[in-house]
Amino acid sequence: MTLSIFSRYMLKRFAKPFLFGLGLFAVLIFLGDMFDKMQYLMRSKASMWVVLQYLWLEVPYWAVRTIPMATLLATLVAITGFIQSGEWLAVQSCGFETKTFWKPLLWCALAVTALSFVAQETVLPACYHRSRQLWRDRIHPEWEWDLYYDIALLVGPNRFMSAKMFLPKDGVLSRPVLDDMDAQGVAYQLDAREARWDAALGRWVFLSGVERVFSSGQVRERPFVEKVSEVDVAPRNLIPRTTNPDEMSLRELRRYIQRMRRMGVPVTTLEVAAQGKLAYPFTNLVICALGIPVALRLRRSHKVATFCVALALSFLFLWVSELGRALGNSDWLPPVAAAWSANLVFAGLAGWLIKRWEA
Image (tube, rainbow, N blue to C red; front, top):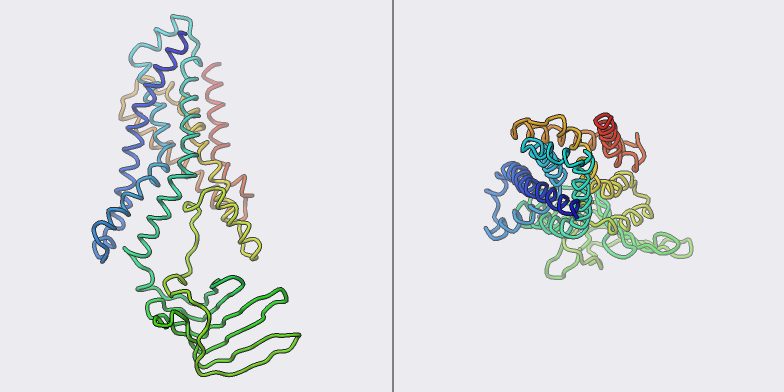
């Protein structure tokens, strides 16, 4: 019964600085990102409502990203406050071992790990995907200014189109080639000098080209001046966009990796991202375990010093994590090792520091 009361007490000591740190770190990073994009927001033709939607939808992303920092800060504040108040000596005089009072903190970190994973798989992908849509289509629309060279696009089931140049704003494709595929390979092809989007027809119109039909090993060609194709994908929807793993849940990312692998597209970066989605929530548990021996050594340090230590350790962890990811993306490390390297290194360091303290 005593331990249960003590665990609840330590939970309260953990919860307050955790919520404070989560809000503070998320707001600081969010504001930094917002000021970085301020010139685009101010010049945008989007309504204030769209901009506010975008800003609000960005909040969950930064909140999830700062959870480990908040966990570390909560651990440091809970333990140093416990020592500075004299409760440390009081519980020791009652026969409590050192590990008895920090175990509830690990349980708190484990609960945060579970909540972080749930948020990463539900709230974050939905909000981040919508915020990117608003940014690309309404606030900073790519189709108004971007120009693409040597592109290859999937424009329908078993239908591919390539072009030397694509200007979305004008709806123009230079040197387009449209291929319809079947089990034997290319079954039908349009090869033209140019293609233009006809808004009235809702189709791409190919100009000055050749129509080819492949059948039984033979090719039939027929030149044309103008040919209305069956491709009805509007220019804005043809813009080639890289898929951000943060816009997908782990299950969706796995399915996407399988699809890219079947198409022969390299998936190393995506594999690293998938492993990162598994490893990232456990960062909270690792960072809490590391914070315990660090806090015991800080003891009576000022809260400002505690805050600075939390920032320094968080950025060090982030640096090691990004280094591992970069090595994984460059094929220097397998995806599993790349994503889990920071957790393993800091977990080993935490275990070593705790053993040294107990010794």
